[in-house]
Length: 90
Image (cartoon, rainbow, N blue to C red; front, side, top):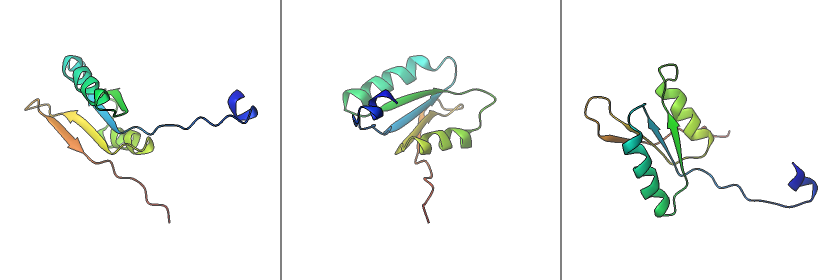
């Protein structure tokens, strides 16, 4: 707010990817985020809870303009890439 009063424009970077992880998966999620960041990507980590649906995670990613939502499959442990559904402006 103070910057806007001074007419200073700070461009906001959109999130390229959101990595969703469950407790105990930090050892896999954090290095993945570090690797993507080293490639110049803007990555956000989101800790999954039993109270949050995957649809809510997709909405979170879409609201931040993310091109990718990555989560670890609970059965295989493999990372899964999802493209968040962005709302189309009519």
